[in-house]
Length: 215
Ligand SMILES: NC(=O)c1ccc[n+]([C@@H]2O[C@H](COP(=O)([O-])OP(=O)(O)OC[C@H]3O[C@@H](n4cnc5c(N)ncnc54)[C@H](OP(=O)(O)O)[C@@H]3O)[C@@H](O)[C@H]2O)c1
Image 1 (cartoon, rainbow, N blue to C red):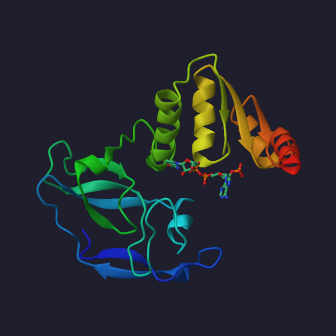
Image 2: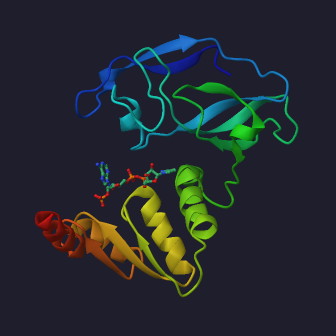
């Protein structure tokens, strides 16, 4: 095991595209697992579109990262010390609450077990991770989707939308994409959407634009 915990902290808010010098690397002590927690060593750190909103001084739907703070993010890692039942040393886990660092102490309630036999490790950030869970529970539990339904998905070419479209199709639904370009629509059709609307040129723009001009 390393003797230090490398951490990436936000150095400054980016102006436009983030660049490497918006983060500083520093070393801190490796934390110790306490009662009912485990020490996890990261194998993969997550880099995802939602992070752009977090590294902005503008208000967002959740607290942002301020200069000097540890960068937020998920990780796939391995338990290297354990004081929690059910999470032995060697267990692979995924969490959305790790931070850009090599080691973190986690409670079992903040992570899920990873089975690399079911899907390769990086997939646990994607369709096996929060993107997939959001799409699945949004459609099945919140939306009550049933076979034969027509399912319309906005942000259809986004990371959740692409998975939601495929789950709906596999569940026997007719699936319609709403997105912003012909290229994104083509991608949606390629992964199984039955049809789609480009809201910049299609029905939505024609009808909403003419209504807003009338009011
Ligand atoms: N990813 C997750 O695990 C997760 C978890 C919980 C909730 N959510 C929520 O689910 C929704 C979709 O998330 P996602 O992760 O799929 O997002 P994403 O991959 O970043 O896709 C977002 C899509 O939203 C559309 N969009 C419309 N107006 C936008 C704007 N002003 N700026 C940026 N994008 C804009 C864009 O599609 P068009 O170009 O087609 O308009 C874009 O591709 C979000 O509301 C997110 O907060 C996501």
